[in-house]
Image (cartoon, rainbow, N blue to C red; front, side, top):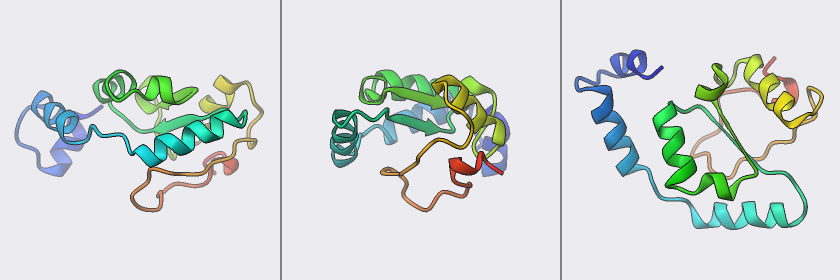
Length: 125
């Protein structure tokens, strides 16, 4: 999944070197985001991380960054075989949650910029 992107980005080293750099440069969890997720969970809401990630980065996020414990669910594109904003990605999320399409609520705490994909309530359409 990663090599085509590396080529587009002009990366000239191996995918493993890219992942090593990626894992060591973006590894801090925003404490305010973690606090807010905890507050949302404490109110009885199911929390989830929806992200487009390569499998090694996903494992790092779950295990080393603690996202498996922080969120109730992690919805990772490499595990679904589809990426946001593909409608099938959002369909997979709703199926995993046992919810009908169009019933998800989204708010984002961690985006550095507005997401370039439709709101999940539209199921990616």
